[in-house]
Amino acid sequence: MGSLTGWRGLAPGGVVVRDEAEQPHTGGWRTGLRPAVDLELCVDCLLCWLYCPDSAVRLDGTAFAGFDLDYCKGCELCAAVCPTSAIEMVPDGD
Amino acid sequence: MATELAPAQLLTGGEAVAEAMCQIDPDVVPIYPITPQTPIIQGFAKAVADGRAHGELIDVESEHSAMSASIASALAGARTMTATSSQGLALMAEVVYIAASMRAPVVMALGNRALSGPINIHCDHSDSMLIRDSGAIQLFAENAQEAYDLTVIAPRLAEHPDVLLPVLVCQDGFTITHSAEPVTLLDDAEVREFVGEYRIPYPLLDLSRATTQGPFAMPDYYYELRRQQAAAIEGALGVFEEIAAEFAEVTGRRYGSVEPYHLDDAERALVCLGSTAGTAKDVVDELRAEGEHVGLLKITSFRPLPAEKIHDLLRTTDAVAVLDRADSPGGEPPLYAEVAVALSGEAPELRTYVYGLGGRDLHPEDLRQVFAGTAPHYVGLRNDVGLRSEPCPA
Image (cartoon, rainbow over all chains, first blue to last red; front, side, top):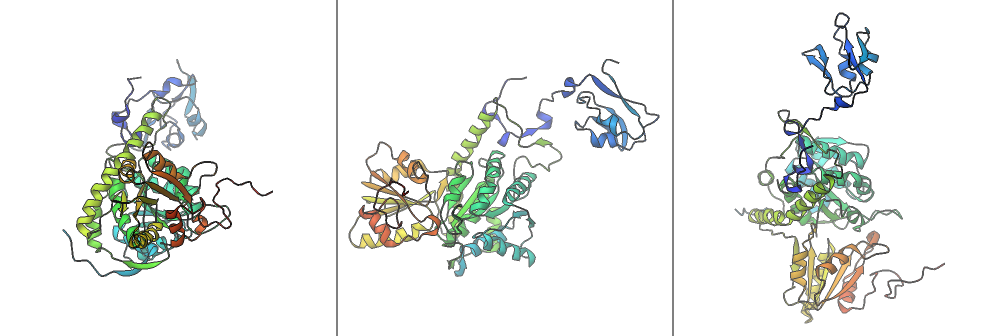
């Protein structure tokens, strides 16, 4: 963590501007499991994108484009909602 | 530039503030009805229905939602106004604190009404005092004209880049909201020009610059953000004077954080908020005609409180009587406590009076007794003998 800012240096109400803020990689807290995808089975329904509580599913336009492991916490929701079982959870190291 | 003044119209305070809202033409008005505020929003809703005002009126399910929606819309980038009274403000209170901390410049009309219980619909200032420490600005009007004028001033104050805080324009329920008196209105164009465009530094809907609004603040930042908020409302005193001076150029009507009335050579002075100042001015005039050196200090800006001005204007008097239209059971009445601190170490003898709870009338004779030093602490209370603490009957 950087040095702390005094009250005069803070934006009104503590507003945080995304592009100026430190982006902590919360994927570092992951459970030990990460999602892996079989693209042969993926039908781009984007349910995983819709359900992901950490916005860790990447899109290319309206197509599924993988997981952002910097933010994935391994909650398994994507694997649970995938209608074609294209997503399975695998140990983080694999 | 002073323009030729339009002839006065006969309007209630509620109608006058509804008229100010039409002229300001806010983008969003989330609202829940409550007496005695209802005529304000009724007048504005009619103007929207008639096509004269263009704001989005949101009929929310409670005052808690009204203030929540107001914060969201003000921070999204839309000029936002609302109105409430009494229990409505009590239900809203949690969110008023959040509006102030998120620096949401919401303008709210408040028809001051006693808090329950017992349930009552008439005026006192207990609703205002409930959110005294919320960080919201509170301006008190003496009459319908002031309620209108302060409402026109309020968006400029709320939205000033050094302020960015909710502003309440408080008018005594029924006494002002429902009493018709002559009110001089500005032209629609004059009001539009005076309030200008709505601008805030970080509109949430500015998609070119994504922001987090109202972030969680742990012990490492909560304290700093509270200090920042306190500095903003302290600075609002000077900003109010600047905007009021500009308003005076347009209208010839000059407002200040306080209004001294015959204080220059006063030996005894009253301090009060709201419509009581009108009665007090009459009593001061009568006593002056009888040769007594009496005066009045009306507080227009209760939050922020101009403590230095209060000190400077009252320190040369012999006695100061502070009239509170709210009580603080088990402690000192709120206005009295603050005036006493402002004058601490100075000569005037201080006296505290509570009056008018739940709409109890205050008569000129009551104020004569206050000036004479013969009034009881609870002015206008039946059978009171002047003691503050009496044993409660079994």
